[in-house]
Length: 524
Image (cartoon, rainbow, N blue to C red):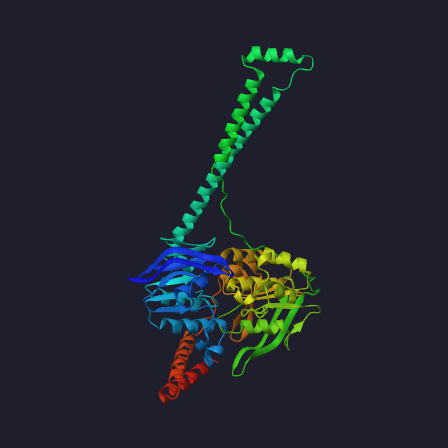
């Protein structure tokens, strides 16, 4: 069954083509992975296909209901219960509500962002039940496991690949190797012809040279006897050969080197580190919210020149602790000269109404020339610096927030899920940077590979305490199992509040909600 069709699609951004597509159809059973670099237009394409906005050119027909899981919650999704949850809990609850609504075609835009491992496993089980979907993700494991067709946005073109993600990776590598071989072959042939032409040019030039002790008449006579041609005829023949070689060179197809996507080049503008062994210390530290303690009489230390990962399930308090450290909260002791800088999940560093350059300059401790250089290395060319932060993609906003943080006066980095929305090359670049960071870094992440590759110690939330352990021990240490029942109850509460918005005077729904709230209190 035809679920969606596209013909002669062209979409522009600020007068320039963002992407274009001649023909595309989605049928029942299609499980499509939509991939491309940050800012290429993946979310825009989903919005066009869902008819949330209209294309500049082309025809889109979707005769069936479509479910759309957006990166950020829509205003109608936000309920009192949802607003009290962590980012990961919000995503899990929104996904649960999303999967309860039937539709022939589903669009999912970065659905695993913020999810811890149990929530991700629950999502994967639900995704497997869908017949037809388009999934936007930079997660290669997810794309490999579920997608049978690949749609790639590259160089302002939408390319459709009738193959799995693994086959697409193999085909792209084979294509790159073929292009490289063809490039080397053509380059070698052109070099050979150029050398031959240069050799003939030199030979023709030698015909003009006569020995110093021989007069011109004798030189011409000897040359004629040796070649049976006049000097002019011989030189003319060589010039003709040179012209023929040059014509062959000009007729060669252009030798195009395989394109390599630009990769951000991260570099910390390191401020002088504090002169202390322990930068942050807490003893018997407690924090939380009314009726919801997160830490109770916990003790921990953050050492200088270490890279510490804070880990734990969604909602345990990781982001709250990061904010408290960044705000130098009461009850925490800081060494003299410590200046923490926070990259939070909401990217509060950024002002959406300011341009890229204005955002970077506002928080910078560097000169404008340095800022422009850093922005360029982070894939913000000079001709894009006047774009408002509000129009950037999620991945581009993360890159801009990293620029603001790296160029600030801070000398201790706190990164709360910094790889969210970043494409794979950008994640790899950030990983390499953290591996060589010459200052203290606090990292919050659910990515085991990132933690193992970059961090030197761990602080794990467990029973309202912080447990310190080595990274090598964590890989074999069983983490405490988060209460699945609590997550299920929270999801039910979200659904009930949505129903109450439609029927605010329904006493049965009110009673069910109150009963769920009582059940949830047992987990506090």
